[in-house]
Amino acid sequence: MESIVINHPWVDGNKRTGLGLAMFLLMKEGYRAKATQMELYDLTIGVAEGRTGSAAISAWISERIEAI
Image 1 (cartoon, rainbow, N blue to C red):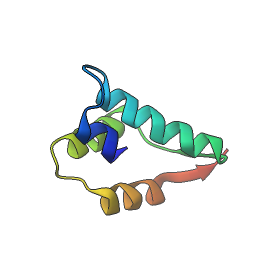
Image 2: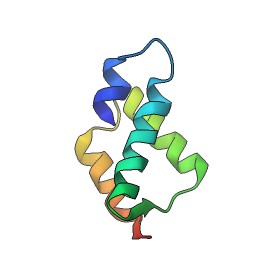
Image 3: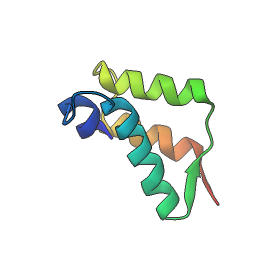
Image 4: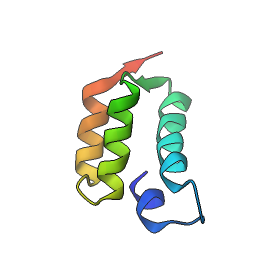
């Protein structure tokens, strides 16, 4: 997530793609992050602004993960 959001591989949609990829990878492994749209937004913007690094992303997901 962090790499896609920060490195901007595309002209548009990098934050959406980074978040979507993170959620897809969780789902592929049989999990989901139980979070509101606002929580997901805050996480993604935090990553984009450089306030949220990989350790914080991992902690955020760990606190909200649930099996599906």
